[in-house]
Length: 97
View: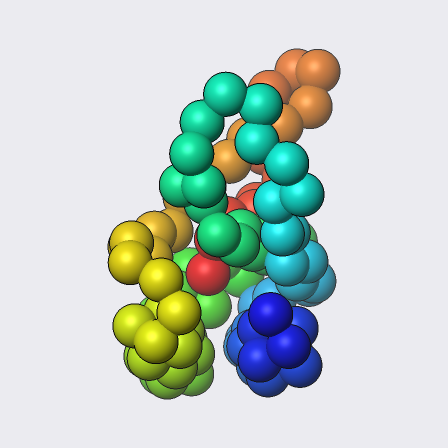
């Protein structure tokens, strides 16, 4: 947890186009096993900023470091998911880096 909060999240904040990053840690599961260990919310001002982050060499370096940490801590996968939220379905330009 400390490496994610102190190393990975700050590295993600420094990626081009990123407006903000939050690491979410499950506190309790209602009806499922611990399928999600950590989830990042990454915020952007525009689709162009999202594309900039996705194509940056720094993103690949962060993902490689996350994969390294993951291999020592849990089995599972790393995914990028774009979400839309809001009452009208407006996009927040967020996703998991």
